[in-house]
Amino acid sequence: MHKVLLVLLFFLSSCGYQPVYLNKNLKNIEYSKIKLNGDESINKIIINALPISVNDNNEKKNQLNLSSLYKIEPASKNSKGQVLSFKSMIEVNLEVRNINNEIVQNKNFVKQFIYNNKQNNFELVDYQNSIKDDLIDIIINEIIIYLVS
Image 1 (cartoon, rainbow, N blue to C red):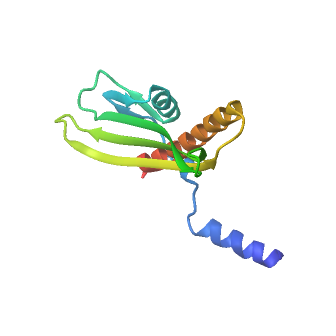
Image 2: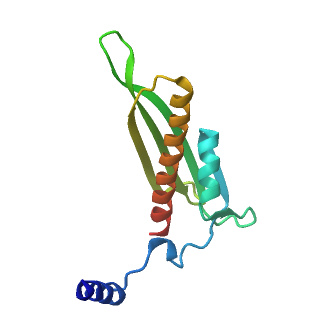
Image 3: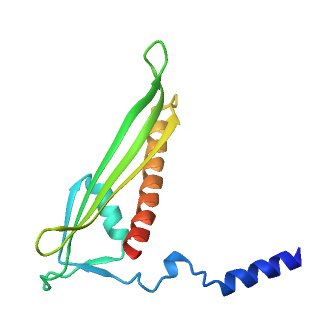
């Protein structure tokens, strides 16, 4: 057991492994303007979590456009038409434009989760909010990795 751990430690230390969030390029990325469309609460959470800043004085910086959409749809129904399960979906479109308004980067992030209906509406709404927060966290991590790489 100790030999396997020692060999694993040797390979991880000598192969140049480095965690993504430890990357030195994770400094604030500056944009001349940030434009938000769609769900305001999702946009605010994402913008506050990202390592970005706005510099109005520098017109030569790129512009960041962020649009988001949050939907809850029935995923399945029984023969009586009652909803058995729901699907929560968050879609975020990240677009970076240069000073000539040409698209430099464009990426669409879509995450969804299917879950069973609950008898109690309060529990259902609480569970949906928890799922929404988890999906936003996953998208934030993917956006950070996308911006750094």
